[in-house]
Length: 517
Ligand code: ADP
Ligand code: ZN
Image (cartoon, rainbow, N blue to C red; front, side, top):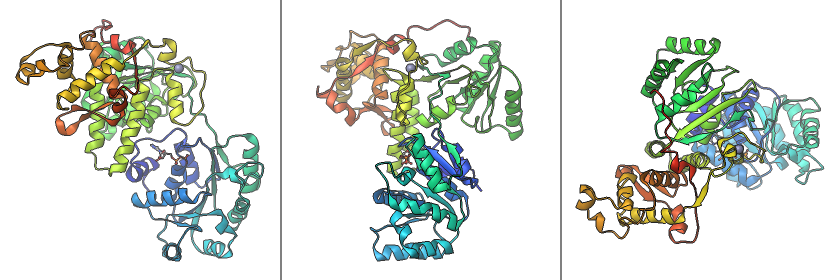
């Protein structure tokens, strides 16, 4: 049986679990009765869809929303998973097909509207087939005091007793009374394995920095934490080896780790990390799955992670003991280009690529955030705001400025050169510098030529990076990474919207501390 993580990526194309998902999947797949309280949008569906794939037989999903059920069935089928729904909206033909698929034991997931449970035939049928799990979505509908009460939900407890299979209940409603009612009515008062975990990891300090000299930046970060266990994540295997060597030259205990190493060497490094104090492992994302070290004091990203989920999972390896932990994530235009290319050049269908871009945008939004990173991150996962005080932006609120004018200048330079150039060339145009290429293309005659002299080159670099972070412009892999405007930028170009940018990252390129590199 493939692991949950493998199924997650093979069937759903996701690179990491969202907070809380993995623990719930494990409990449900192990056949435990489970109650999971997760915020809306937190990814509850996967918590029963993955176990459904991991167990023999069919998982019965009870959900009050017909449209949502149909959506999920469609999504599952597109992912190559056999699923069907029995709802009042079905045609007779659809219903017949579902029954037949059930008889032939082809279905992995059967969605049922709660009112179907009252119809005797459905119960009889469910008794005849090999049901492995009952999953109840929107489980708070069983609560008579809540405003979503569904009388048919009261039959679910009986169904569970009749079938004698485990039940997993999901809801976003966290109050104690509703929980108690769910336990009483769905589980006959026997407390199931219950998951209610805030996503916040308040002991982890969050920080991002513009990547200007990654080697030096990482060496500085490690130097300030000498003797502490840490992980540095890199985008490529060769980088892990070089950076580990640089750390050793600077007096750290450091080892590299990546998927291209012999299994035996990987095991040795894992074991060393586990028992040695103060070892730094410089690794690709291959490192981490099996790592269960409570006192990892820091995690740094030398390259931007793949998605906001991957980011959360990777920094989440720090400070499992609850002690203070620090993180630093470096990002620059090359990272953005690389990640966009990976998505565009992948074989995923268009909708999934769009979703992948959206998840990357969320991470870039976090990187370019103007206010508290923790609340930005929690907001993405559907959690409510907290008092943070433990991120770089709370430590030193960035200086902001109205970036509308320079952004419009940059957009104009992009459009007047017909979206065929990268930021290097565009910045020279904005600065009014001539070179052979600019003269040869006649770009010194453009109205945009030299309009951006009020800003320095590093400042322009930061503006372009923030524009990419806000998805105003995107590198086009079919034009060797030339920058093209996105629709998001239109209101700014037309002067209908303003954009606020950060000043701090504009100057950070100049503040380059000296270190032996
Ligand atoms: P809920 O039922 O908790 O409101 P869903 O199960 O509908 O949330 O999931 C919300 C969205 O999050 C969906 O678009 C889903 O594809 C996406 N999602 C769920 N898990 C992950 C993950 N591990 N990585 C990326 N996206 C995910
Ligand atoms: Zn903060």
